[in-house]
Structures are given as structure tokens and as C-alpha cells.
Image (cartoon, rainbow, N blue to C red):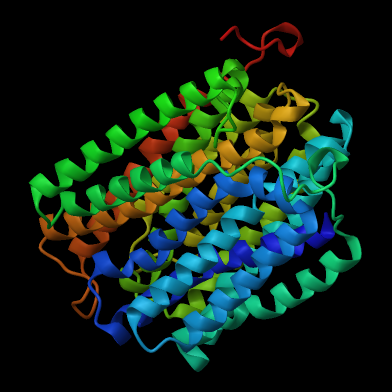
Length: 467
């Protein structure tokens, strides 16, 4: 678990720390807000889709070869992004990093549910989470300093030492076997390329459709969103056919016969939209609306990250004592409240207020993170755990990828409504109002997730629903 934690830290750091450098990156390549946000959403698309390949990769290559391969790809993406002279190369490097990050992130949940007894899973999740959240807690602080001292390129190289350490640890501690203790089988089941292609096409259509809604061609936006719905419908039909014929499928539809798991995936999607949308919006807000330097962004977020680590450790022990719906629902309420309070901040407000609201949201996250995946996946049969971990992470990241695009879209829309643009030097009341309205949208999204989270209750004995 320690070996995996280092790699997951590297993947999370690569996903969040780049947000600190978006303003400098936009200025260097003369990018619009719409194009600049693809540095984040491109990563999210690759991460989202690649999560579905994790069960197949583990079966085919085993834990160690899969893990080491993803770390090598993540490190190569970081080096290529930092050395790139053109924006398309930066974007390509981010996609490579996203693919690696997506493959590695479902693995810890698979191991927790297989290697630990139910009474120990919450504590294991809490301890693992305390380590993993150090990445987003320390990443922006270090990244902000690097951007101020060495420029935006330096943040891409942050993952290199983590990747090297994780590879060394993998060869010492990560087993070569596949899930369940079986040997990795090179001649095992084939990857469901049709399902993967449909998932990729649907995700790209969804995100590009969201981008085209504002400032683009309405007909093209409608066509892309229709294409996303069509890809989803065809994917579901393909998965049903694969289930009837006994073929290997990208997602096993038996998962959704469990009510708790089904509701957990719905919560994960909505929660991902709010969470990842805020990780994009908050650093841009602090630099463009509050006019804080990049180094201050990480410093302001550091206390909330430390509180998050402590909260996760405490919440992990509560997962066996309190119902999942109480922990997840309560955490979502705190997260929504932190977004709803952001409009109380102005240019003359003390920074401690911003720190307090950010900390409140991180306390909420601390209750959600250890309990959502474990609570949703506990009823699953053992053979469904790898697929379940990949599917719930896929839906969470799909919501996250949509959330990044949605926040950029809403921000651009509200800026235009207030007669402001981010490329203009200096802030203004209109710019603050546009950001405040975007935060209120995130609070409303969290409110929807609370409603869904309250349905996270198992029938007696965790009996799965009939198909």
C-alpha cells in the first residue's frame, strides 16, 4: 500500500498542480480561456477513459508490470511537457500523464477490499488517504513557488522523483500476480476495444459539446451532445449483448444489480463534477479575481490540505460505525456550504476568511473520500471488485472532466454577461461577481449529490437487487 501510495500521489499531483500554472501558460502561448482549460480537461478525459482498462491490464500483466508501466508513462509525460516548445506538445504530454494516472488510481481500492478484513478496511482507507492527500496539499504550495521562481515549465518535472521512488518500491514490494492471487495471463481475455472506443467517443463528444455551447456553433454543440448520448446508448446495448453472449465487456452490468453500488456511482458522478470543477476554478479565482501571486495560492490552500489529511484519518475509523449515507451526505453538505460562502469574500477581506472556507470544504471531503468507494463496493461479489473499482472511478472522473469544462463555460458566460474578460489586467466587481456565481453553481451541484447520497442504504444483509 505504501508503494502504491507514492505512485497515486504522483498521479494526483500531476492532475492538480498544473492549475497553478494555467495563467502563465496561457500568457506564454497566447491562449484563450477555452483553449487553456484543455490542459486540465484533456488530462481528465485521458484519465477517465483509461480507468476502464485497469481490470484487463491487471489480469493480463499483473500488479507490478501494470504499475511500473504507468509510472514510466507518467514520468515521460512530465519530462515531455516541461520541455515542449509548442502548446499541442504540452497537451499531448498531459494526455499521456492522464492515461497513466487513470490506470493506477483504481488499484488501491481493489487491494483494500481483497487484502483487508471488513473491520480493517476503513482504517486502511483512512491511513492511505492521509498520505495521498499530501499531494494536493503540498503540490500547489511547491508548484506556486516553482512557477514564481522558474516559470510554468518547472511544475511538469515535479512528478519525476515520485515516479522514480515508486518504481524502486514496486520492484521490492508490489507482487507480480493478478487480482485474486492468480498468475498474470498473457493469453487471457482480450480488451473490449469496441466498448473502450465508444466510451472515448462519448466522453470527447460530451466535453467538446459543452465547450461549443458558449462562443461556438450552436448546431455543432447540439450535434456533439447528441453524439455523446448516442455513444452512451450504443455502449449500453453493446454491454447488454456481451453479457448475454458471455463475452468479456469493458463494464460488467451485473454491478448495477446492487442498489448501494448504483447509488454510489450516481453520487460519485455528481460529486466529481463539483470537486474537479472547483480545483480548476479556485486557483484561477485567487490569481485573476483576488490578484494573488501564484506562490500565495499554494500557501493559502496548505492549511486546508493538512486538515483534510487529519479528517480522512478520523473518518476512516468511522466507516464501520456510521452509515455510509451519513458520512457522505454530511461531507457533501459541508462542501456545498464552503462554495456557498465564497461570495462573502472581497478584495478587502482578510485572507483568513478564504482559508476558513477552503478548510470547511476540505473537512467535508475528508468524510466523503474514505467512505464513498468502500461503502458502495462492500456488497459486491469478490470477482466484481476490480470492475467495480474501475467503473465507479470512471464515473467520478467523467463527472470531473465535465465539471472542469462546465466551470470554464459558466465562468466565461458570466464574465461576458458582466462585461469583463480574464485577459484584461486588474480585477473588478464584475469579475468577482462572475466568479461568485460560478461558486454558487458548484454549491447547487453538491446539493444534488446530497439527495442521491441519502439513498446509499443497503437492504438487510447486503442482498443485491434482482436484475
